[in-house]
Image 1: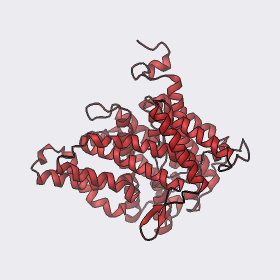
Image 2: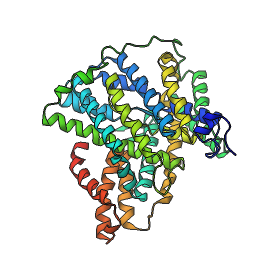
Image 3: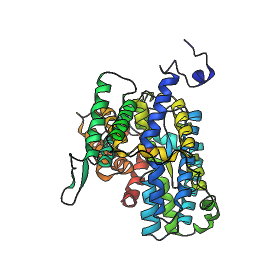
Image 4: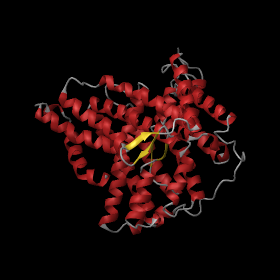
Amino acid sequence: MKDSNPIARYFRFSELNTSFSQETVAGLTTFLAMAYILFVNPVVLGDAKMDQGAVYTATALSAAIGTLIMGILARYPIAIAPGMGLNAFFTYSVVIKLGIPWETALAGVFISGVIFVIITVFKIREKIINAIPANLKHATAAGIGLFIAFIGLQGSGIVVNNDSTLVALGDVTDPKVLLTFFGILVTIVLLVRNVKAAVFYGMIATAIVGLIFGVIHAPHAVLANVQSLSPTFGVAVTHIPDINSLQLIIVVLTFLFVGFFDTAGTLMAVANQAGLLKDNKLPRAGRALLADSSSIVVGSVLGTSSTTAYVESSSGVAAGGRTGFASVITGILFLIALFFSPLLDVITNQVTAPALIIVGVLMATSLKNIEWNKIEIAIPAFLTIAAMPMTYSITTGIALGFVVYPVTMAVKGRIKELHPLMYVLFVLFLIFLPFLS
């Protein structure tokens, strides 16, 4: 049966067994799961002496533009926004540690985005992604699942810092932790009962209970003025001449390298979760990567660090998202967020944590597709999976897996099975591993 509505036909609702309501709930779920970036990004970049109000607006606009391009052009339920980790690298490694002015660092982000666009147009990024072995793709998906579950556990206070053991169990009598446990339990019950939007409804129930018991405070206002972009707009372009040293070139290449594999890993993981990979390849990968790379350029001009595909998109997929219409909804919500930012105070870590933890479980099901009975595959797969949460970096996990995989395959006598690009990636990851640290 063909869709009669042109929008449903463009996004192939019937073919992918979805609907307007299902995609709308998925888009809203993704937005709620990643709305924290609207508040966290200005704080992180504020440490680099950037204007927080301008960064808030730049964050919302770059997320909206990038996500809308992803939804309309690539038709994937994947959202784009300034990346956590990438913003920390921008502020704490480049600006504070190296002493590079934020204006110059922003120019570095702009140049890395332009390079991204160029290698995407020539399909270099797409060829690299398609050359990645299926086992490593499954390991990446599972590793990201553990990573985002760890983010949820940490943000909610269930897992806390410990100087002796690095991590430990938090205070389980804390009302915020108890609220998170409530959210997890509700979401589990809904999932087991086969409720399609279980993740979304779990978040809503958690927010309501949090408001009732005073764990979450009611917003102080409904509307807020849109902050001016003037302190950051266009600065990246005017400071391009400042990129004139080997140190700054290395910074640009590091932005490029980390951003490339953060996005590649997320695209593979979310597409795999949604069942969108075909013959180990991502259809319309070029369009998805163009959406990502162009949003980096746009974001840097507006005044924010590198954007990337968001792993929280998997929460929308878990809520039923299968098409780019979910991303369109998410993008529109980011635009609305420019005016209703106080309402987002209700979406605390305790509300999003259950979604991230449960989605981590769902993504970890990719473990079953890995050939664990073959040690030459099991070792790099395990390193890929374990390193992501343990190093708090998707790229580091991918790097370790890509370095070890060719070695174990060669020792086993299966080196001829590797795509030639895997040799290139092996060398590049060896070179860049020190920079990832």
